[in-house]
Amino acid sequence: MGILLSYSTFMTLVLILPRDEARWIFKIFHPSQGNPLPEKNYADDCRVFTPENPVSQYFNIYENVYDVHFVAHLAGWWFKMMIIRDAKIAWVISFSFELIEISFRHWLPNFWECWWDHMFLDLFGCNMFGIFLGSLTIKYIGVSRINWVYEKPKA
Image 1 (cartoon, rainbow, N blue to C red):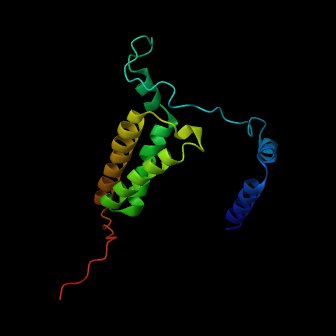
Image 2 (image 1 turned 180 degrees about the horizontal axis):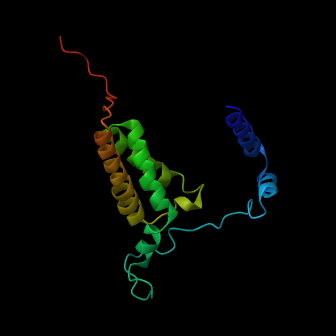
Image 3 (image 1 turned 90 degrees about the vertical axis):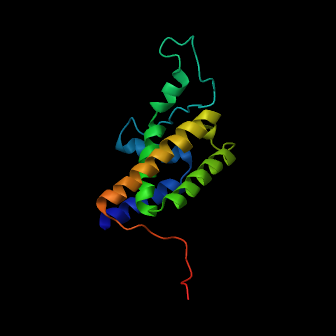
């Protein structure tokens, strides 16, 4: 409990500090920490077929599938399904998250994605597969489904 409280206090301190001072604090722990991460723009080239690329003719899709966010979406929706335990509610939340991502892309450049990335890699790719894996895991473990909608008892 003491470690958790210390960590929470430290993260609260970092949260209220200006960005450069917060980065300086992380450099105290290790010199490689505290450097700004390079921004990656996911909407530079939205072509699906790139025949001129020497790595792959579908390099844009290849690059997005082998990105850390692909695994984060998949594992995140598996875990969310384990918590929510209702596929319909998970689908509504998944769709809502994608709408929020589209709505706030003027704030975060990483939210600019190609249309096929939003639809086929995020919504009907990782999110759907994560929800499916989560529901299979729930059935395997034997955890009961949560009914989020109140149904009036029949008289």
